[in-house]
Length: 355
Ligand code: NAD
Image (cartoon, rainbow, N blue to C red; front, side, top):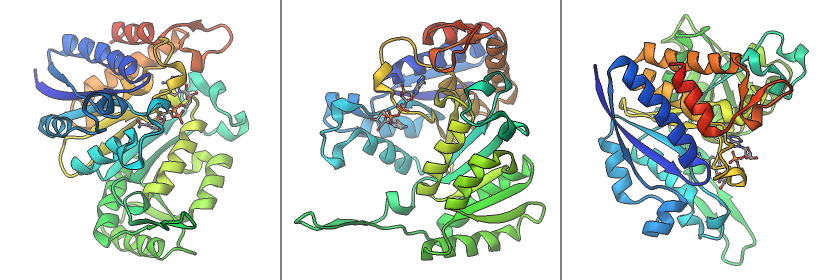
C-alpha cells in the first residue's frame, strides 16, 4: 500500500467532467490495490480568473509543488477570449509548466485496432499501425522567447531561442524513452533555415554518442508533417522543439483517431509530473455529459506509471479501457454503426468496473 497526494486542476469547459471521470477510475484502482490517493482540487484558467482575477493563483502553484503529481483537465473558452493577452486562461498553463519546471512533454499516439475507422487515413496507410511517441520541448523556444510589437501595430515579432543545455535535457528524455521502445529517434528541426535549429541538430548529434544503441536521424519539420500523413508507421520517437512539437503532436493524434483518446505527460527535473489529455476544454460540448473521458483516464494511468512507479496499476487502467472498447461502448466522438453510445460519466464508470 502506498499513499500519494494528487493535485487536481479540473479547469474549464469539459475539464471538470473528464477529471471527475478519471477520479472514478483512480478510486477503483485504490480500492483494488489498497493505495491511498489524496486529492486536492485547485483553480486554474478561466475559473481562476472569475474567482481570483488571475489565471494562475499562487495558491495553485504552491499546492501543485507540494503534490506528488498533478492531473489537469483543460482550460480556456470563449468567455475569456476578450481578456488581455497577459491574463488569458492559457497563461495559467504556460505558468504552471514553468513553475514546475516541466520541460518535456510526452505524447504517445497509438492507433487502437477497435478505433481504426476513426482515423482519417486510408486503411492502406495504417496497415503497419501507428505507435509514435512525440517528445516535445515545453518551456523554451518561441512560446517563451522575447516578443515585440510596434506601438502603431505595423509589425510584431517573436523569438525562437534555445540553449545547448535546454536541447540536451530534452534530447536525453527522447533517447531514454527510445531505449525502452524501438530505439529509433527522429529529431525534427528546420536546420536548412533557422540558426536555432542548426544548434538543435548539432547538440542532438553530440548527445547521441551517449546512446550508441539508438539510431538517430533528422528530418525537416515540413517533411516530418508529410511523412506522418503518408507513412506514420516509420516513426518510433520524435523529438522536437516547443512549436514544432505542438503542431506535429496534434497531427499524430488526429491520425490515431479522436482527440478525446490521447494522453500526455509533462515531466521535469523531479518525479512530480503533470498529466493531461491533449485536447482542450471543448466548450461546444461542456456540461452535456458527452465528452470522452478516456484521454484523461489514460493520462492518470501515465501518472501512476511514470510518477508513482505503479506499473501494474497503470496497465490495469489501460486494459480496462480496451475491455470497454471491446464491449463496443463508445462516446459520441468515437461512435460508429452497431456500437453502444454512452455518456462521459457512464464511460468512466464502465472503465472503473473493469479494473
Ligand atoms: P478542443 O480540443 O477543446 O476541441 C476541438 C474539438 O474536439 C471540439 O469539437 C470538441 O468538442 C472536440 N473534443 C475535444 N475534446 C473532446 C473530448 N474529450 N470528447 C469529445 N470531443 C472532444 O480545441 P479548441 O476548440 O481549439 O479549443 C477550445 C478551448 O480549449 C480554447 O479556449 C483553447 O484555448 C483551449 N485549449 C486548452 C488546452 C489545454 O488546456 N491544455 C489545449 C488546447 C486548447
